[in-house]
Image (cartoon, rainbow, N blue to C red; front, side, top):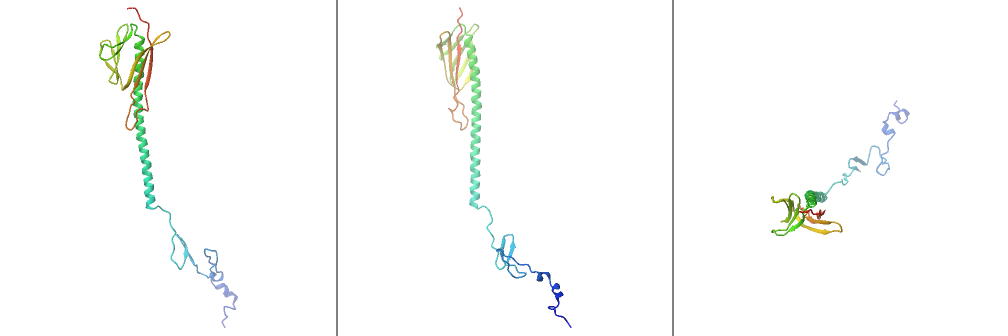
Length: 220
């Protein structure tokens, strides 16, 4: 005689574990579906969707073509501004270096002129007999002449040749000033600013003033 499985308490243990202890299926809202082995939602890399419908993909982050073109335009704009600033800096650097060289030569010439004035013990005068006025310094051994011609300063010792000692001169004037106890010669010298590329002239104005005391005249 066969015993029914309903009356046998041990037959309950022979059933599968899934049937004995069913696990509730939870949806997105946390509510159990109430059906064993059935899941109304499926998981994927794109999220959860219903088992009866096609997955709805969410919009992924990216750039549009217009946005990419805007970014490329901004990059080229920054590169253009940086390149212009770099070339302007190079122009200013070259002009400053050239101006520094001219300033150095002008200072050296001014010290040389002051030394010639201090050694002119036989008189200092302007000689206007030549085509161009000459600033003549008469010393014990020889004469030293200065003249300003064609935007340059020339210097000559005695009857020797003229040497071009300073170029790119804007203006030059030598005047005598009578002080209470001494006689002073003033040399106002202005150089022409150097330009290079887009560098605008006039920013640097090399203007010099040299003073030298005239020595006492010796008897002939």
